[in-house]
Image 1 (cartoon, rainbow, N blue to C red):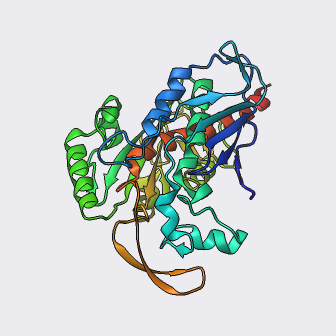
Image 2 (image 1 turned 90 degrees about the vertical axis):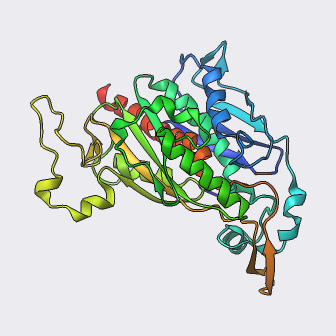
Length: 354
């Protein structure tokens, strides 16, 4: 299986399955001498882990990270940073009923066709539990660039949207509620709706908005390795993501050039920022903001028609511990992937500067 490594200079390789012994990874390319805040790494993992509220999966995992290499006396050595997070609450029996059954909108069918074998215990590598490694890698990446602020938050659940621009929001409120929405009135509506959906045995999708501030100008390459292209790739690699837009996004397609152009100030900033902090694939020093769309979780507690490995039509129903809405737990994952992209480009930029 290829495609388990992300990044060019700051690289993260992940391994492990949802109900295997552990999830882990190797971070390569991290410069030596970085003082690692272990508590900050664990805080990000705690934001991602299941069982943290009534509106997420009730799987109980401590998700404590153990670093195996690359850190000595609290500092990175420049060697590969190896780490593991043990799976302590596996319940593979919850998936025995789908051993030979393809769940609708899951990776079961495609994995079987590509590899001729699949780990049916929670989807194996296709499970969102793989994102643990991304959060660890992203937490280290954040510490490489302490001046950069990365704030993601839930901006919609189903048809419930925040009706304010991000500039009017207080990001310190994001972690004050289970939905991770900084607009508290909207957060209450979202939480009530998710609880209602859960009672119906169904799931619902949503969007996460991410804002990157204090990003220096000059990150990104002008052709294939555009900054926004790498951010898009990073976000679209997250489980359940169906869409990515930055700056004016799809709304920009409705506008005239005279409306859309970001006019310059004498200091190089712009009056508006419909470009989303990126022009020609390169950061311009303004806020970078983007939105990521997540589909409803495919496992629902309702009967559905599907087929088995022999092409026979069967009826199945989800069981076990699943999120009725994935977006609250995906907030730290979006932040982590953004951090991995920025750290990689910052190291690439350092080569030019040197």
